[in-house]
Amino acid sequence: MANRSFLVAQRTPDPNEPRSEQGVIAAANYCVPAFWLTLFRPEDLTHRDEHHAPGGAAPAKVPAAVTQTAQAITRARAQRPAVLDQVPGRLAAHFDEFLTLIESIHESCLRLDVMEIWGMQDVPQDFARQLARALSAPESQDPLHWVTAFSIAGFDIDGKTQAVDFDNDSARFLLRGYKWQRAVPWQD
Image (cartoon, rainbow, N blue to C red; front, side, top):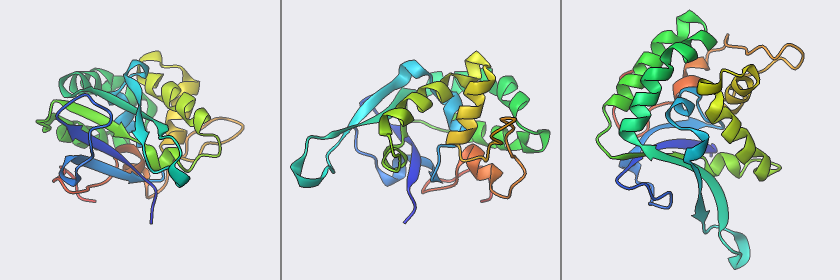
C-alpha cells in the first residue's frame, strides 16, 4: 500500500475534521504535489491529533495545513506566474488544470493531509520544518525554498547544482496529484 497525501475539501477549518472519501479532491503517492503548496502559507500550518499510536500512547501531533477555499483560490491565481517561472513551459497546462479543479470546490475549507508522508520520515520534526519552508516558496521566491518544495513533491534534485529533474513520466502527478473520488479536469 502506498503512503499518500491528500488534498481535502471540508466544511470547517478544524484540522481534526474526519476525512471523507468524497472530500478528497486529489491524492498523491509518497509526496506532496508542488502545486498544492500554492494554496497554503506557513501561517496555515497546524496539527492533527492522530490516535493511531501503538500501545495507547498519546495522540501524535501531525502537521496539517488548513485554509479557506476562497483564499486558496486567490493565492493560486496570484502565484501562477511565480510557479510557472519554476517549471518548464510544457508543464504549464498542468497548473491550469489544477486551478480549474480548485475553482470547482464548494466546501468552505481546504486541508493538506500529510499524515502518511509524515509517518515515513526518519525525523518527523524535520518534515514539519521542510513543509513550512516549502509553503513559503511561492511568495518568497527563495531558490532554496523552491528546492525544498520540489523535493517534498518527489522530484529528483541534483545535489551539486540543486537543479530539479522535470524530465520524467511522473512530473504531472508530482505537480498536481491524481484523481481520487471526485471528477478532475484531466486524464490520469
